[in-house]
Length: 262
Image 1 (cartoon, helix red, strand yellow):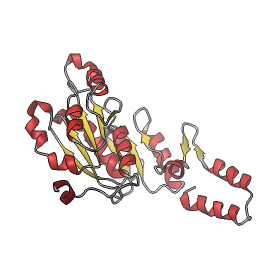
Image 2 (cartoon, helix red, strand yellow):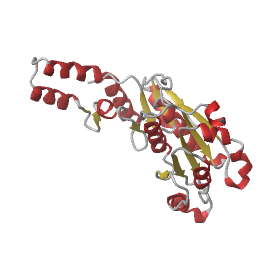
Image 3 (cartoon, helix red, strand yellow):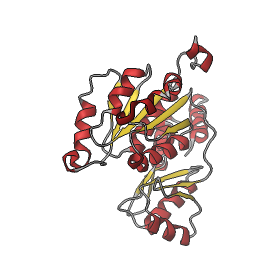
Image 4 (cartoon, helix red, strand yellow):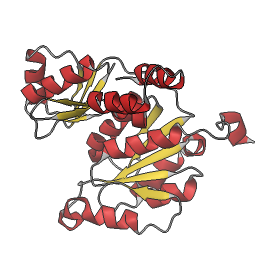
């Protein structure tokens, strides 16, 4: 059931043509498609504005194909598949599932990416090139959710001038995703420069004392800069989802380059 179907039923209730309990019954029945190995929440898009996303890790290509078919049959126009490795993507394509695969991001996209309809720019900044696998996931997710996105790579604190060269982008952004491993210092520096929310993503990149991203996670959690929130280690998807929610909030007019320069 999509938003148009729900509105039609609501109008029928308002006109006295449908009992309220019947509307509840129909929505409840239509809300889940049971495949045995997965129960698809087909009403999530109506409730939250974003339809269910497939987490590809741990699922077989056959299972993913079945979930995609169920989503499309329920009226979903596009589907995002995260953590999809190349071998599984190849098998999924062999099963006749039509999608675009972005290997660097380990993301599959069924359907066309939408035109941006957010308030402004989602800026993604990585501390190093080794953090790109997380940044690419964030980039594709943010685009899938209808955001204008810019990616700035390898702008960590070891060469702070590389970050400061993007001061105009930082000032213009509606929300920033700062991605860093090692000691995770990038988020604090960005938080001290930006007037918008900053979402910090610790990565598992680093030597032994990085503890698979725990060091960066704790550093970001203890940042002295205000306005920073932190997601899980390597969670580019979660950061982009949160950034998209912020970027689609109603509020004051978007800052333009001219306003930033005033």
